Image 1 (cartoon, each protein chain N blue to C red):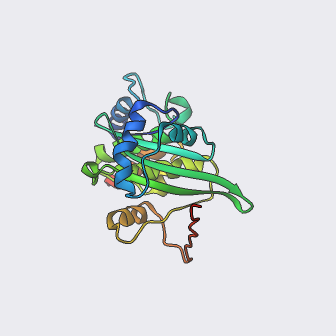
Image 2 (cartoon, rainbow over the protein chains, first blue to last red):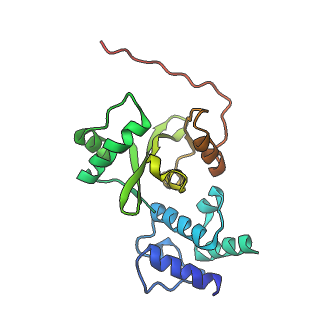
Length: 77
Length: 144
């Protein structure tokens, strides 16, 4: 599965919305319930799913789904 | 695991502090419902809670205040239930506090952690906290 595909699964689980379809440009404003705290719940879930760790600086710097996906991929490569 | 901000005082919250507080301080009693209400109502304090497998297992208080040099914050009273340690709950609470602090325009977040709490000290440094080159003082106000 692609990174974006796996991320979509994680987003659907964290935000309890099976209809979420991710795109790189999507921001917190586009996903209901994506606030600063659910962002951490999302980060923890993404870390666990991909078995990676983000630096806090990275966590604070993601501006959209594309940033997140890119960072995941950089840690997997 | 889920981190959330406590915005209301529920029975569950009151009960959680009854078992979490003794693990945080042997000298401070658990906050009463009324005291928790004051915390939740305070614009200066953000009370973060961690839920794991349906149970409240951790808490962190983030105090945010403006002084002449800017908006500052302190992390206080971080506690994770003994049986739930090592699962990344304290780290998630800390990261959530930093994310919330950034959202509030905070320029720096301080905390203290006794050296004997080795796991906690490792956690804070892993997240990005650096030791400060300063003296930390305390004045204890005697009860009359």
